[in-house]
Image 1 (cartoon, chains in turn orange, yellow):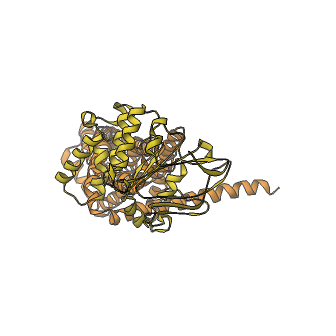
Image 2 (image 1 turned 180 degrees about the vertical axis):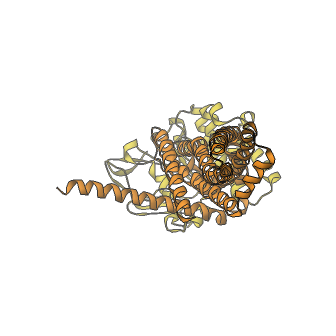
Image 3 (image 1 turned 135 degrees about the vertical axis):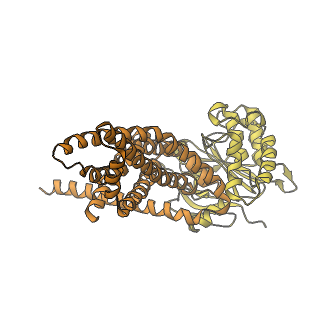
Length: 259
Length: 224
């Protein structure tokens, strides 16, 4: 009779231990900022720029497409439907609360997690399987300094920047949608800017940094967690993207709860 | 008498047949320990650099037990030892040039110009200048092994640990790899101390490896 409870208990204990290991790993990534040797900064900067190119710049078309289509559809419908009941001013709240504050950071983070999170996990897992991580350790280079820190920093900068881009494009696409549905641009900006508070912008920035931190650490943790079998690489990628998405949604809910 | 650059004291290796290894590697000598895969002989190099910890016993490298050092200190100490891991361990997204340069760029305060000079010397020494701008996937096994050795010797260490360094190489290439690792001759023997682990040693190299051991049925037996 106790067997099912033992199975559940073992599973829960394993998951708690895993979360603890992830927390320790995240701390070591933060700590790596301070412990990176001066000589290694130049090399780490080069890896950081490569990662930034892949994670931020190459993701711009995807983010622009997502943002513009989402905003255009939502604002088009809203202007039409809210106009019928004389509540067209509510598109400001809709734009700021739903798109800029909530969906902007969330969709940006999901896009980056799906695109770069899997790539980071697969790359680091391959590094591990090919013995490159041990080779780094063997020549006195901390893999956290060389492999994790640049990706971690690039993920934070990328998600933060892409979130701002997403929101800016959303506002412009919303303008086009409102204009197409008979609203003047001056009125659109009056409504949107009246709804936009400094707190919303601040929250968007904080979310970008938190989600970037998740994408910088969770895939790296899973990637470096493999042992020496190539079959573990796709498993690590899958766990990385699922773990990242889960953590992003949980954090998003926590932001709503505390704000 | 010189302190042995590397010593294993009652170190347990092997999964199926546990062996207890006690061995002192004398300075300026090439020493190899051979054994089949199940013997766990491949772990000796990893234990020496504290990449893994032995269940029992201790390993001293240049008089230091790396397993007891704090992580940062252990990382810094490893730069004093050359390490050629099994399967070369080259970073696949870097060229051979950048692979050889990596330890110098990350672990020394030398200027890029100094590093470039040193790398040119290393590339010429291991004879891979013609493929230095290619990535590991685009060169053959011998060139990869030469690049990995160049990287291991970047800091001109006094002790070099080689894991399965001759697998898949021609006898001529294997002999060159060994001579590069030895670093020439001094009055006391080879300039560097070389510790080799693997499953076999090419016949042509036996005369150049002064001490040879084989791990058989849990015991370390000298080969004659």
